[in-house]
Amino acid sequence: MRNLLCIFILSLSLLYSCNKNDESINNIENQELTYGYDFLMNLLNQNNLSNKTPILVKSPFTLWSADLIAGQNEIIGSVTLSFDRTNMYVTYTANDNWTIKATHLYLGDCDLIPTTRKGNPKIGKFPYKMNHNNINEFTYTIPNSSLRGINCLCIATHAEVSNGSSNETAWGKGVRFDGKSWAMYSPLCNNGGGEGGGPTTN
Image (cartoon, rainbow, N blue to C red; front, side, top):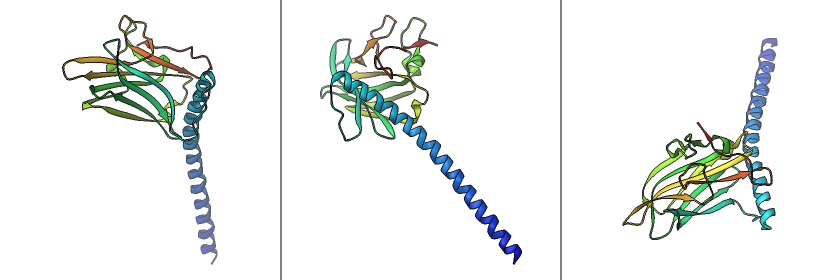
């Protein structure tokens, strides 16, 4: 009888310990998700306050959008960054007479954008890239937890596009990199000012 009681107490102890471990793991995962979401919501609040735009109640929320520009001056579509509680979504959209053949995306710490010593972006080293079969729209899904430790978020959206008769390079409109190319990126900084951070050579 005593042996059965000991086994029962031991089983309860193990069950309690497993439950506590599961709770700890869930708390860590929730903190990661909450951090990314809170960071993005803070950026959204800053943006809406500066533009005097009310926040929409329904998610996903659009944090950033820009014209997709080909050949330095022709608007051929758009790029948007939106998010919900779990993920970020970067969507490339081409106008009807244009198609997308490839995309290269950087979304992360401004100080870590891969660039040459002359300041031009190394799109081949962007963390998100894909070839496409002449499509009109494509979306990357990136977890909010990837934002851990970031204070200034940068997005650089490159695409290879075609209108059937010619192929062009396209970038989401923003500020130009330091190099001589016309490549662009956009800083989204958690400081209310939009300054700070920027690509560095590596």
